[in-house]
Amino acid sequence: MLTTDGAIDLRIALISDFTGWGWAGCEELWAELARSALKQGNEVAFVQSRDSVDEKKLRPLRELGLKLLSPGAGTEFASMVKRRASWRLGSLVAGWWSPFVNIPSYAPDILFITVGNALPSLPFIHDLERSRALAIPYVIVCHNSSLFDTPIRREDQEIIARFYSGARRVLFVAQRTYKDAEHLLATNLRSVSIVRNPVNMIDAGALPMPDGPTARIATLGRLTMRSKGQDVLLAALGSPQFKDADWILSIYGEGPHLENLTKLAKHYGIVDRVAFKGHQSDVRAIWTENHLLAMSSRNESAPLVIVEAMLCGRPCVVNDVGGISEWVSEPETGFISSGIHVESFVAALDRAWSHRDQWAAIGEHARERALQLIDPDPGGTALKILQEVVAER
Image (cartoon, rainbow, N blue to C red; front, top):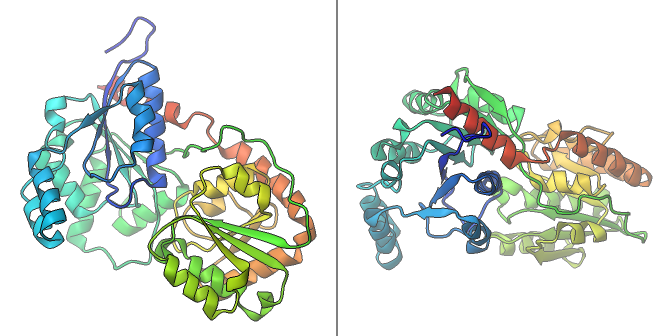
């Protein structure tokens, strides 16, 4: 509906395909969209299709007026079966119902669908189709990028490509993620735009480098080796090139592979120089204490931790995955490992070490680069796209 000042009041439904732990980085954008939309007088509902959403993230949005859409009695029953009987039986029961069954009765003007990877899963698409939610205009935003999984079956490619072609807009947080999606589908996508993730810092000012001769290295992310690759970093620092160098590694994050990583640190004989710091919500406190970000991820989208480190004036050593090279360039703002294996990361880390006396200057360039690329209002940008889609109708 058009208001007197020319803006469009919308009823927006937000959907996330994420099914893991309480919150993921890919959900920050829809949260910012919700915040911007609610502050401008729009009506917004989040489809709570999983029971593990972090209430600390939802509470501020609910105070602004965010509604929660129940997944329906069938999905709730399936979740109960998973908890009290077995996951397998619960999954079979869940197949009879869609967690999005209540969307049509909410009658949104538009759906904003967050896909955690470059491509959504088939069960997620089937759930949307069974609920008839895709009869409503929808916009998709895609995040993580991965090309090393099992090739997609042709019939699955066709289903996913149809899902994308039905969208009014398809958004990606990095150019490479967009190109990876086209590669995986072997098709060209239309109505594509690149959007930026929000930065989780109120103060984005530069920080001075910590004092002291010891190189303080930090890595941030959930402790899941398959995606974040902390095991590669430990192997690199345990290699002959770095075993006797003067460094300390701080690992920030929580996750299922803490014990595995601790054993690896012992295996490489570096456990006395590796500190597992758990989750730290104060990003600036991290970079007050550390000189260098090292991220040996096996797959990524456009990781916020890199952007935040750059804004604080820190150089990065990273694998060339996802949209990372759109932010980091060598040697201006950091050092890039061309592969996702230990040898290439050792080489990148070695190049960074040889430029150690320039880390402060490289960090200044990194900050300048980040300031050029960030979107100061990503929620507002996403909202504008939704408004344009509805206006086109």
